[in-house]
Amino acid sequence: MLKIAVLVSGGGTNLQAIIDAIGSGKITNTKIEFVFSNNKNAYALTRAMNAGIPTVSLSRKDYDSVESYDKAMLSEFKKRDIELIVLAGFLHNLSPEFTEEYKGRIINIHPSLIPSFCGKGFYGLHVHEAALEKGVKVTGATVHFVDAGIDTGRIITQKAVYVEEGDTPETLQRRVMENAEWIILPEAINKIAAGEIRIGE
Ligand code: GAR
Image (cartoon, rainbow, N blue to C red; front, side):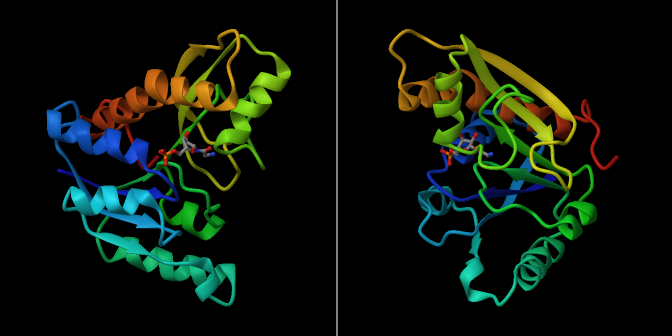
C-alpha cells in the first residue's frame, strides 16, 4: 500500500479526483494518510473530512520564519512514513531542505503544458490568463516531479486541451481541470503505486 499525503491550499477539486479514483478503483494499492494545508479555510479540508481522511493545517503566519515553518511541516510528514507527496493546488513553495528530504517522491499538477506558462507567479487562474493573453490555441496540464526550483522537475505526463473561441480564464481553467488535471493526476498516482513509474530516484 503506497502511503501518500496530499497538499492543498484551496478548493481541492484535484484532491476530490484522487479520493474518487481510489473509491472507484481507478487508483489501486494507495492510501491517503493525511491531507495537509497551509490554509485553515481551504475547502479542500472539508472534502478530506467528508471522506474520513485526517487533516493537518499549519499557517505560515504562526511561524517566525519560513525555515521554522518548513521544519514544522517536515515533521508532520516524517512521523507518518509518507512515501509519496502529492501537491494538488498547493501554493506554498517548498524549501530546498524539504525537496531534498523527499527527493523524487514529490509530484505536482500544473495547469499548463510545461515549459509554457510556469515558474514564479504562474499559478491557478493566472496561468490561464497568460495563456489567453498569448493567444495559444492549445494548452493543458502537466504532472511533474518537484525539485528545488519552481515547476522545473522532470515531467511525468502531460495532456493537451484546446482553447476555444470566447474562452475566459474561468472557462479555460474548468476545461483544463475536467479534461486533463482530474485525469492525469490520478493516473500518475496509480502508475507510481503499481511500480510503473519509479520514485525516489
Ligand atoms: C489547479 O488548477 C492546479 O493545477 C493549480 O491550482 C489549481 C488548484 O485547484 N496549481 C497550480 O497552479 C500550481 N502551480 P484545486 O484546489 O481545485 O485542485
